[in-house]
Length: 239
Image (spheres, one colour):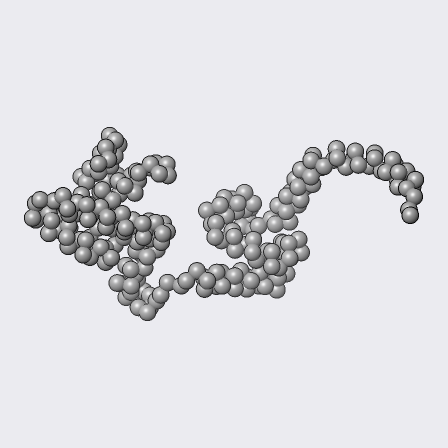
């Protein structure tokens, strides 16, 4: 049986709100699983009244597996008939419990209350392939719109990188929106416009200086060796 640290014991206190921050592999999921089980035992809740959410489908599946495994262990050890009945009910309905990703949890709420949310009751979550196709189509349509409006910055962008590379780059920025916001903060002007031209001129200058710092000495050495290379090749006799 695992020995809990002082911090882990504190994290299992069901009477307080708890935020756990720790490195990967330090036992956060273990504590979440234990807290889930103890909530079942010591709180008067139904199986759909406990929510455990994660960021990825893989993590959600692992969490369901770990909670199920822990429930099986606790059921074997439980002598109290009332606690056994509660745990048994949760174990039987574990696949219906609210253990999922954040977006799945939110979608379940929207699907349960579509009128209040103002959405179509038949709304479905799009798969990753369709999502990427929609993003790519939206990016392409937006670029076309800017080009038709003779936006000089976007024209320079397309001229420098080409259409396909520009679309791929913008899709990556959308997928990494947190870092994109930071990037925008660096190049966003007070008048609400993006100064693409000056920004990419700066990048071009920095790239040129970086290239120069690395290859200038090697290039100078190569130029110095050219006369001797020329002489050697001139003296070479072809058969």
